[in-house]
Length: 454
Image (cartoon, rainbow, N blue to C red; front, side, top):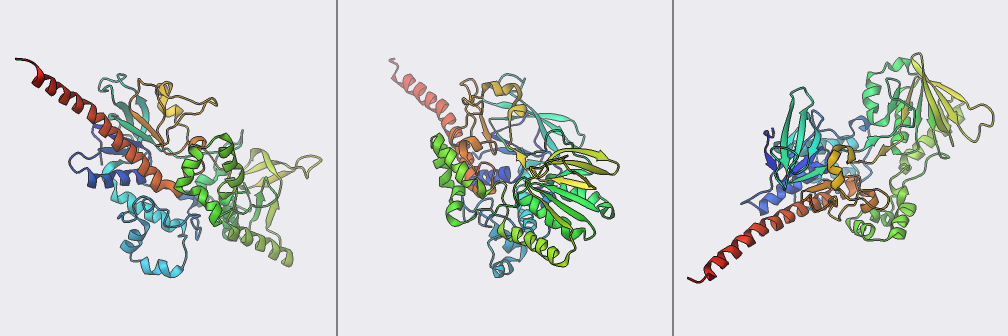
């Protein structure tokens, strides 16, 4: 798909990961109900093709959510873009059922996402990065009710501008590194793991370290141990070992669509309770099976006396200094009362999570129209739209970066189908309301003309 210069769309999506892919499908399925005047949409993705956490598609790693929490099912169970139709199209439906598992592997779920993205290729432009957004009257082709977006071809094909009556920002999370630690060919973030590991000389990786206590950290630690049988593997944990993820039925209700209302319309004590009691459903926790697997490795090593897996509990990284072809890591722990220990490694992976999406830089000067709360965070309506001053009538929606207003599921797959459906409903409804104004004015004008005395 190639959006033409100066075209104006009802919706322009910035980023085409799972969230905006789900939105594109939701808008497409709205077309069945609005055949005479369908919503027009265009999506722009900086990557050359669809990809979602490609560098963490580790062998046999499974999803933490049910296959039913796909792009569409919770919004439209009969959609042709569901995970079950995907399995049927691949000829694997019976085999998947025979597994008796709710959780597909991450690799298979990624194949599903690629399959769905291929079905929406008519609305997305890849190798296309949105570099600027201009407000009403700030560009020659901008009307009072539209924004202007500059699209740069990341493959070197120049730039162009398109218009949008609504913008949906879904640029994803930003990898988080400790202050002062710089990524390079020996210092990695988990978001680039498989790529960096694939380019490394595995024979040179005789000592490796993984920083973090969450699911990604545990998976990479296990991967290192299995793929590098000659290497010493160090797990650097800020806690005393790994904590298990709470995926029990009652706790999982915090990911239900109804829980978003409880959080959004709740007062501060309610919101605080959500985070205090249910943070362990998603953040800094590990699946029980993975914890037991790593513990069994450690136990077996104690039996044999051959030690390769080292757990450094209650330990943090103070600094990392490149030393020749490896890295020298300065550690800090309450165990160390004298000089902090140094750890020399050939590679170190920081599975230290991500920062939430912040649209401020992308919005640029447009951000001055966006209202904030007393803590300086963007105000967001229940339908994920930024609250703006009256001068800005265009819709700016967020898929991510709304944890402070919508809770745990702000950017998670668990609520993706319902969330994208709510945004689509909002866009369709707002357009209908906008179109009613001139229509009503025309009717009133006609009535006045009829009632004029001759």
